Image 1 (tube, one colour):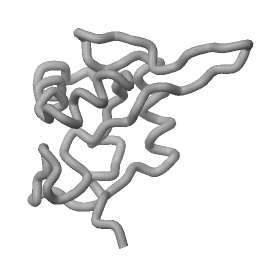
Image 2: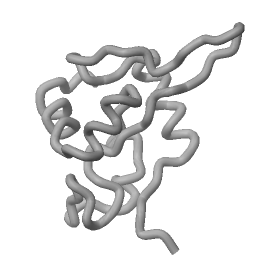
Image 3: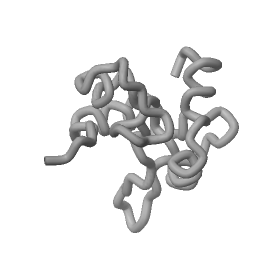
Image 4: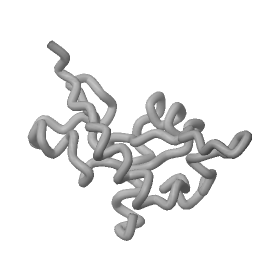
Length: 102
């Protein structure tokens, strides 16, 4: 059994809707959807603000599993920023602290 608190499909779609399909990082603002031949494809990622599993770069043992997989712990990132954040780790916390409206 996985120890990772993944987002449900509903949370992922809600993040996309709340962000208007734009990356939540105000320095990025790339679209998280693309259109090709009349079809819309989601290329963004729902990113955990606090890591989804022990050992993650932003893991907080003081939060619950329910919180870690909730909409309150989610942001929409462009794919490029998502990959960067997974490796660097602190951008989501900075965005949450400085941009409360997201």
